[in-house]
Length: 178
Ligand SMILES: *[C@@H]1O[C@H](CO)[C@@H](O)[C@H](O)[C@H]1NC(C)=O
Ligand SMILES: *[C@@H]1O[C@H](CO)[C@@H](O)[C@H](O)[C@H]1NC(C)=O
Ligand SMILES: *[C@@H]1O[C@H](CO)[C@@H](O)[C@H](O)[C@H]1NC(C)=O
Figure (spheres, rainbow, N blue to C red):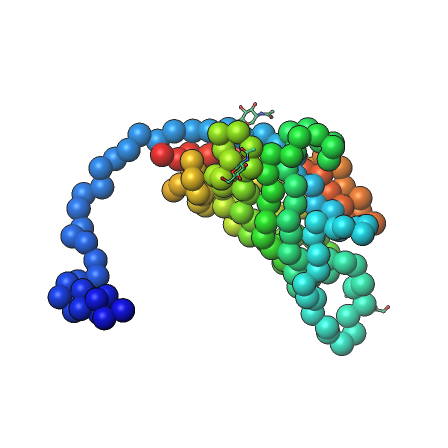
């Protein structure tokens, strides 16, 4: 402890010299998988954290405006949940649209757990207009192989159960990274 304090007093600077950024060659990786968001059943992968309690609110749907869910959704190579699991999306989604057309904002970390990408992840933070069958989310960062990533995810709803909210979504992600 004393040694640490002495070190910081002697070397009072807490930042390096700013140097030109040596440009590294950008690479592109394409990812294709299926995302399973399950609200129903005994072991849901998306659970309600909170929803607003407003007087005169007669919208009793599970994902009315303001509902916040935590997710740990499996990612598989094929649409069936029984196919190989290659990672999981952990994070939050919030029902963000006031109108009658449901829309979400999602904050997800897609972590991969198999093969060369084991331990790598992409970060998604985006509006997600779930009522549109095809939509696009922004990839804003990543970890491991995908450090400093940018990109986009093209989504297609594979199946959705409008009564309980369960959905399987095809993801086709283009990731640009170093
Ligand atoms: C709630 O119910 C009332 C009367 O049934 C209706 O006029 C109103 O539009 C409903 N509000 C919402 C947000 O659905
Ligand atoms: C992925 O990495 C973790 C942590 O290093 C390790 O425990 C696990 O066995 C690896 N899984 C595969 C399938 O390589
Ligand atoms: C995924 O997207 C890329 C580029 O947008 C496209 O070339 C490719 O055909 C798509 N793959 C699938 C399986 O849809």
